[in-house]
Image (cartoon, rainbow, N blue to C red; front, side, top):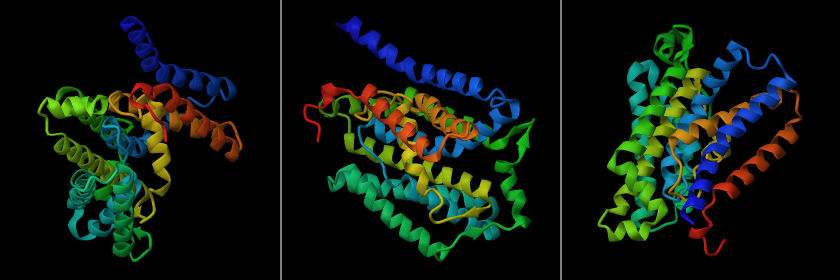
Length: 317
């Protein structure tokens, strides 16, 4: 029985990478010029903002929870950066991340202390944060003037021919992987997702770990919003609205189970690349936008069906 389980687990772990390879092969055959050196860099650069949001979200999904406030927190982070760069310069970035961290703490406390389901807690937090972003920006896009380009260069410039945002994404990836694999917190949230009752019985403060996970998700979301604002040279109070479904898809398609306990940031890297390559590749091939949505939704359903741990779900509602 254990051998069968191990074999299935190994197959599920390898499936996202195999699908990415298959997807890439199909696109290259259909459009041979797709994977030129410059196109690869564009794909990687375009994936960093989405990956940053998805990486933070993976901490929460590992618990078996969900965070729907991610796009609102990212938009708030972008607005704060755009508003504060003229007066605070580089300090605008940590302020934006602190704001996202506070939003994450709030979501976590509402979920843990008030025992509100994460779906509702983060949906409500997202509404509050969206309202705050609209209020701070006066419901308009806040443009970052060209004279402040030196503050944006660490994100939008290049180093050794590689866009800096790719290097930033690599650092975020390493931080996420290290935290999940090599810290007590990372091991705890994986265990909570696999079996919360057993973790409680072992003496671990489950509530504290959950609040930390939501806090990290908020900080990562605001970081992604700051990166997006730098790339777009503006902060839009609704700028990240369209990133919720792709971020969730990146986590789940990468192999993190929506029931928690399995997966992590490392797999989210592959999931993010699948989402980005699908979107850019289908556009490159001239696939109709409606057909793209159908295919994208179908892949998401398949990913959830494959990674779902049905032993944890006696009843599906």
